[in-house]
Length: 79
Image (tube, rainbow, N blue to C red; front, side, top):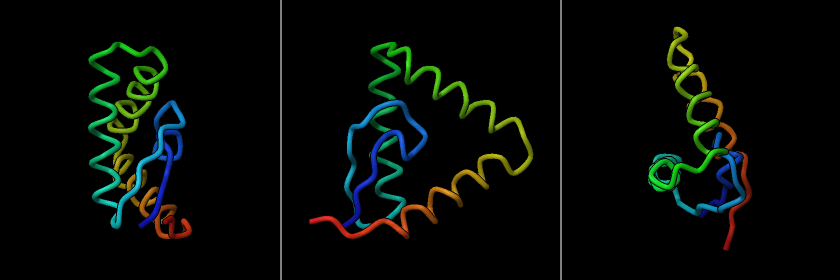
């Protein structure tokens, strides 16, 4: 199991997510992002806006996901 923070995954805070796969941790991050969106959290809304800008460039999101996937792979196992 590996642990990454919201910030490490492109978000705005230090909430930690733990999962066995990148896909699982991405889903936890997405759920957290939706909760922050509903709360209209300014810092998270700004991070989401930056993500939307990435989606406008060719391969932007694909490259972003690949970079985060590599970061996940290098993280030490947590207990």
